[in-house]
Length: 101
Image 1: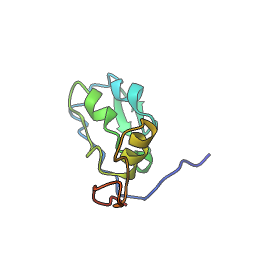
Image 2: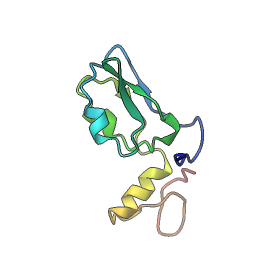
Image 3: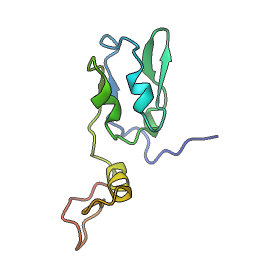
Image 4: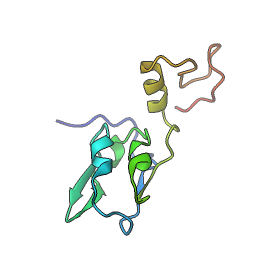
């Protein structure tokens, strides 16, 4: 089955392979399974499927992953699901946030 990809080649997710020890914490927390353990380390396999939630970066004890969390529409979707106010992706009368998509 093909994975949903919002926009191609715009995700900010990067990995420093030299810092990765293969502990797998990122694999445990990634909601989109964009990472895979291979040959003792983790690699990005589905980069365009990343929703930039930042869970991998926050949970990597070695600082091997970096992502500009909260820059995409996924943030608005997650905030809306959590019932947070101002959980929007476009400027309207209920939200003063700049448009992100």
